[in-house]
Image 1: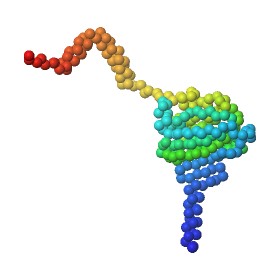
Image 2 (image 1 turned 90 degrees about the horizontal axis):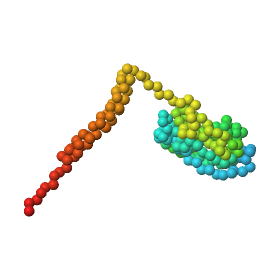
Image 3 (image 1 turned 60 degrees about the horizontal axis):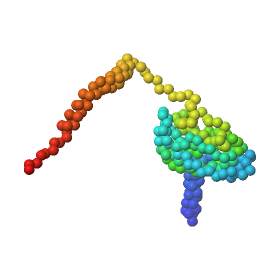
Image 4 (image 1 turned 60 degrees about the vertical axis):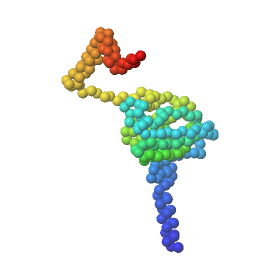
Length: 233
């Protein structure tokens, strides 16, 4: 009986350690959810206007459609009604830690004004939040160092939002565009000039010798074409 009690106690300790709930933060060995809210209405909402299901993928492969970026979400913008309940499925397609954070939410409902999902590697999390009625554009990003700077940034608009945020991939211009300077040396300039000359002269000679080239091609094709054998009557 004593061994059974010890076993049950150890099991409860393991379960509580694998999924810890600290107030507004729920975490386990795969990831973390902070400030999820599925039923508490913002002060400026009398009811939930709509239920919106959104699946958001994060990973390196989603940055391939943007030049110079390393990380990205599969979408860069969402638009919902005021007082909408958003049910988010966050999927990390990498073995790299990624986050999905929404900033600027009312602090009385979302501590630090933030909604936060985090996966330490490949996996999936689900959580909900209820948006206020204010016409506003909210920042959605990953706060892991250099992930947002390298492309993992999007925007969530309520009622069309109050404008686009800067540096949203594919939507708005970057605040500071990446610069890729060329270290010009004598060798690199010589290679560039050689390429320009070749690019100009080769088409020129091909045009003025077009007839001769055509004849040579026809002769080569004639040699490759097998001759038909004539049969005896």
